[in-house]
Amino acid sequence: MNSNVQAKNPGTLSIALGELEGRLNEVLKEVRRLRNQARTLEEENQRLRAFMYSPLEGENGRQQLLRLYQEGFHVCPLHFARVRDGQGCLFCEGFLEKKGAFPYG
Amino acid sequence: MHINCPQPDLLNAVQKVQRAVATNDNLPYLTGILIKAHNNKLTLHSTDLDLGIKFSFETEVLIEGDILLPARIFAEMVRKLPPIDLSIKSLDNNMVEITYHQSKIQLNCFDPSNFPSFPTVEASFQIKSQANILKEAIRKVSIATNSDDLQSIFNAILLEKKQDQESFNLVATDTHRLAVYNSNGIRNSETTLKALVGSRALNELARMLSNDESQVILTVGPNQIVVEHENLVLYARLLNDKFPHYRQIIPQSASTTLKINTKELLETTERATLLARDELKPRSHLVMLKIDDTLKISSEAAEVGKLEEELTADIEGQPIEIAFNGRYLLDTLKVIDSQEVVLEMQAPLKPIVVKPADNDNYLCLILPVRIHKQL
Image (tube, rainbow over all chains, first blue to last red; front, side, top):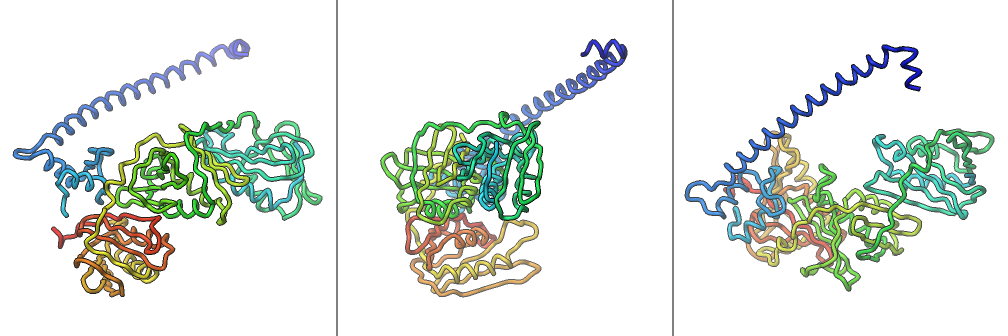
């Protein structure tokens, strides 16, 4: 069937293939751009995590967890370092209490 | 395929399976309802690959066979047909003809061989319960699920039981509250058999279960759960995530205990929550509980006004002031059927335990909110 199309309209297929190739190149370019962006964001994320988890001067492990929690991150093992939604978390508070550092109570 | 069946029976079946029909048309045949007619029995199937529903009923089958009808138009059509016997016959070229009185409808349909077959689930464990008990249990714990993220464990219900016992636990949390139901009274002992099921699947199940003592069998496999109840079979995929260790956050003691009429507290909390609606933080309905010799509930919204109500309650223990999201207490009170409810508190910022006064099969933990006074 393809050969029939080519025989009837010899230029049509090559034009269509040319267009397809052009579009594929655009998609590949976009994929490369997104991949680079993802790599940059991952590196940035790693830098931020390292900065965030590094204890401040005179701060022990418990105080560090408490600070992270108060800054709006989960410290419970299951969701460690994920952003909280502004309200408290039963499991973080349970965890901090177990560690002897219940945030406010 | 050729069948004769009463419209009310067909409508009932269609309404049950319709809830699992896929809503997007990436896989068009999943937007259909598969109808199988064999041995004078009609079985309707639907699935969106996360949830699957199968419902059967007896009917007159003249010629056996399968058809896959587009769910939306078929369901609407069946709903609008008169409550009489319908004749449904498959024609050539993937067409189906529905005949009633002197009228007929012809619908295009899909190739039934494209519809996925439902899995055979090898049982890791099984739970047998009564429909009314399971329905109630799901209703009570699903209040603590969060509906924003469908794939999250906070939108799932943990199902657990001990190896040799018939009783089971249902647990749900959105990290701000935790609801636990045990069919045989809450015990703080570890369970070995666990499965995490999406709350949507269990809520759909609860919607379809009858409110009687008929048996429901839940078979949990490595990746799926199958629930069988009378003519209904429901399949759901299990979530592979871990559920947090919830037992360690349930307080074992209380410094203040409050016993109060559920209806009175519900009505007061409704009024307080209405006033506490914060335009800036739509999810925070801050309500204040002040307990000394009496119980006072208050709430205020800067540009609306304030409320303070005093309620009669049995109070034991230390005076306490505690603030929390009134919406959470309201949700809990709505699913507690006992006449009286017990609130147990330890400290202003430690979780409040809310449970029925006459039954130890349910509890809900609510995390208080820090208010400026407590800074």
